[in-house]
Image (tube, rainbow, N blue to C red; front, side, top):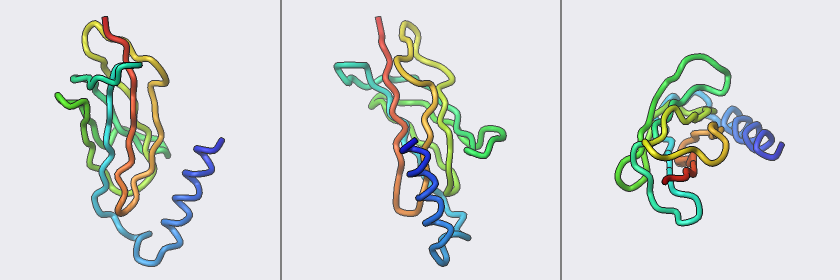
Length: 116
């Protein structure tokens, strides 16, 4: 419930701020993947990014050697969904995270995996 209220508040602030509501500039969503407990970076976790309002994917990100990946998107609300985990690993937690990309902010979608 808190996440929904935060998202609604952030979007309302964006809409009410002169000049920002019309901004279509690039935003960035950082995808972070690590092992549960030890927080070692996980390479090769793939995600798709779709608008909160629905529709098809507008971006994708795959984590690199440092366990991070970046998706460039216009400002707005997005759902980041895991589409593939590295071989020998399984997702530990929810497969989807909701984030809001706003000017001057780079939201993070964090995922944890268990690897054998």
